[in-house]
Amino acid sequence: MSRDGKEPHFTELVWESTEQNLPIPPRASADLKVPKPPAAAARKKAPEEATVQLQLWDMEETQEPVTTTESQFVVRARELADHKETASLFVPFKSYWPTYGHMTGAQSRWYFFWRDEVRQGRYPKTDLSYIFLHVYELINGVGWDEPQDGYRQLNLLWEAYRDQYKRLDQYLGGWIADFSFVHHLDVPLSGIVARSRGLAGDLAELELMRCLTAAPEQLTFEVLTVMSDYDISKSKFYTGEGKTAAERYIPQVVALIDAYVARKHGSNLIGMFPPGPAVVRERYLFRSAVYDISLYGYSVLVPVVRISKSPPLRSLITRLFRLTENKLRELMGYRGRLKDIKVDADMEDLITRFLQREFRKAEQLEKGPAVVIDAKKLEQLQNDSDIVRTLLTVEETGEIEGPPAGAEADGDSTGRTHIPAADEPGTQVQHADPAGAEDDAAPSAEAGHEAVKLSAGSEAASFVEASGVVAEAQQDSGNSAAALWDSFAAALTPLEWEAVHALAEGRGMAAVQHLASAGGTMAELLFDGINETAMNLLGDLLIDEEELNEEFMPMLQYLGGVNDR
Image 1 (cartoon, rainbow, N blue to C red):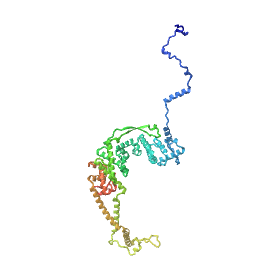
Image 2: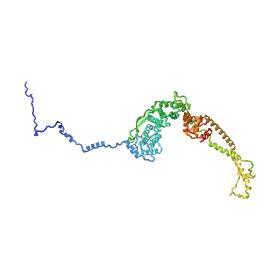
Image 3: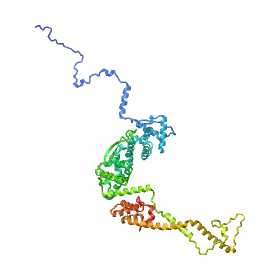
C-alpha cells in the first residue's frame, strides 16, 4: 500500500533578533512584567466620583448624629414649652402618633390654649390625640422642672380624662411607672395596678414588697389579690353588698396582723416568711409613645422579688381573706359562712375585736355624736343657778324700808323709778345741799332697794322654777355620772385601768406599751378592751388614735386616782 503524501512533515521556525547573550530572568518575575490591559485606561473615573468616594470613607471615620422623628419632636417641644394661646374654639384632632406637624393652625391654637388650662388645674373636654401629645411632652422632660412635678401632672391628667377615654388606662399606667423608674421616684404604684389590670405582674410585686417592708398601712385590696389563692371576685357576698366593706377592711386586717407578728415575734411578715432572691427584669421604656431614647435609654433594669410566690405567706394571706369575709358576713347579717379556715386563736380574736370596733365607729358616725355631759355647760348652769339664788335671797328683815306711797306713782309700769332728764320741759333739777343730804338719802336708798327687789322679781320670776330644776338636775347628773363612771372603772381590768391612768397623766404610748409587755399582751389589745367597755357603758370610744377622747377628760375625776390633765 502506497504511503505517499502521508509522511509527517516538520517545520522549523526561526526568530530573528539582534539581541544576544541576554540572561534568563527568574520564573516568578514573569508575572510582574505582564502589561496591564488597555481597557482599564480607556474608562477613567471622573474626578468628581473619586472625590465622592473619598467623602464616603471619611464619613465612616467621623459620623454625624442621626436625627430621628422623636428627637425632632423633643427639640420642637422645648421651643414651644412656654407657648400660650388665647381662648380658642375646639377643633377635632385624631392622629395615631400625634405631633405638632400633624396639626393645622386652628388645631394648634386650641392645643396651646387647652394645655395652658390643664397646667392651671382646669380640664376642658378635648380629643384623645391632644391628651397624648401633652403626655409625650411630659415623658420627654418638657413642661416640668422637678420629676415629682412631672409625675404629678401625669397622674392628674390621667385622673381627669380616664373616665372619658378608657384607652388611657392601657397606656398611661405603664408610662407613669416607667417615669418613676427612670427618675428614681419612691412613689406608690398601687393606683397604677388598680387602674391598669394588665400591669399587675411586676408592678404588683414591687408594690407588695414596698408596703410589706416599710409601709403596711398603704396596702391596697388590688395589690393583695395577687397574693391570694382565693378568688373573692366570685363570692356572692363580695359581688353583692359586701364589696365596699371587703375592699376597705381586708388591707387593714393584713396590716394589723403584720404589726401583731412584729410585736409578738420581733419580725414582720416578710421576716417571718422571707421570699426568694430578686430577679432582674429588663423593662422597655415608654412603649408605643413618641419617646427619644437618647434621654433615658432604651430600657431599664428593675430588680423584682417574687414575693407572691412564697407558699407560707401566700397561704396566710389567703386565710386572712377568707376569715375577714366571714367576720364581715357575720357583722352585716349575711347568711352563710366560708368553711375550713384555720388561723391562730389569738389572731382570730384580734381580728374579731378590731372589726367589731370599726363597725361600731362607723355606726356611731352615721348616728351622729353620742350624748355626753358638757362640763363647760354644766359649769355655766351652776353659775346661773348661783345668780338666781342670790337674787331670790335678798334679806327682808326690815333693814330696808319700802318706798313712800307716792313712789309707785313716780315709777313706770315695771317698777323702775322715773328720773327726769335735765333738759326735759317743765322740769327743774334740784341739787341737794350738804345739810339736806341725810334727809333725802333715806327715801332714795329705800326706792333703790325696792327697785332691785322688783327688778329681781320681774326678771327672775321665770327662773324660779328653772333654778330648782337646774339644781336638782345638777345634783342628779353628778350622782349619775359618778355612778356610771364607777361602773366603768369596775368593769376595767387592773391592767386596762393602769393604761387609762398612764394616758391621763400624759405618760404617752411608751408607758402603755411597757405595761402591755409586762402583762404579756399588746397596747392595741388593751385599747380594744377599754373601748369595748366604754362603748357598752359610756356610748363612745374612750381612746381614739392612741389618745384619750377629749370629751371624756373632765369626767376622769370619777375614776379613782385618775385626774384631769
